[in-house]
Image (cartoon, rainbow, N blue to C red; front, side, top):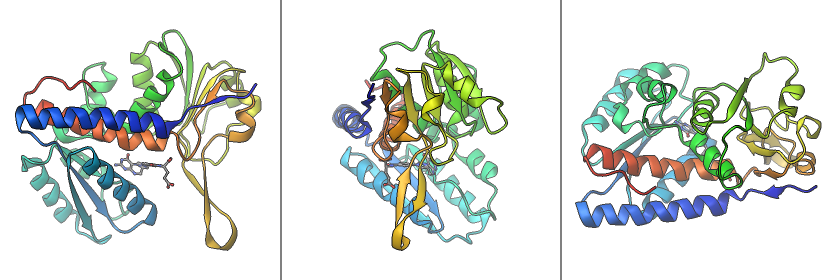
Length: 294
Ligand SMILES: Nc1nc(=O)c2c([nH]1)NC[C@@H]1CN(c3ccc(C(=O)N[C@@H](CCC(=O)O)C(=O)O)cc3)C=[N+]21
């Protein structure tokens, strides 16, 4: 069998187009322009690429984009002061602080300072707790993207066996909660799990979010399963260049799986599109408008 390729580029473009329509409507009917502020500390080249693409796509959707670049040695008090300013700024509806932060900064303190109503990353404990409790919340973008990609294959996830490999705050844990909300049966696996290949073999839905290049092998996968690759690993190739690979051994797994996401062109594309969705939702909520259609 050869797996169907789940095209994140196409699905993300469709989602962005729907966001752009809703942004145009909210501007026209309510004179509100959703605005996203992205804070980048330091100059990690990979982070700069993501921030650039967030900026371009935010503007393309008709939203306001505010970029704040701070030096790697910024004092924590200054970063907190910027977040306070963005919390109070009525033109800003979403705040994203690009992670990871330099070691000199205390990530938890920084995230906790973001107004939960503007926390479009869904990382504030208020949102994480609401999601875990099954209440309405701003949810992290990458997990939201994973669910949308899965639903492009399966209309309903009810009763399906899902395995999430990885338990990070940014991806694994919130993805588990979203899958539970879809009535899937969820196994949470991680670096200390025993018999990972056997755990995977039962799964109809496999999510790999560990950051280990091509860790998940063909022999682990139930024939016909849907496989979603959240990994973004840069492997060095010739003359200082790098190649992007996921956490799934794509070539061999695509011969067993029913459907699979590529890297690049899969989950990464959805992450930025879902950030736009969250910014639109936050803007509507902050202005007391009805929930948008996306
Ligand atoms: N507070 C915070 N929130 C995040 O959501 C967040 C973050 N920090 N730090 C870094 C990670 C990573 N991330 C990606 C976004 C887009 C692509 C993406 O568009 N990837 C393209 C390819 C990009 C390339 O070629 O490098 C693709 O997969 O097709 C990937 C990864 C968001 N993250």
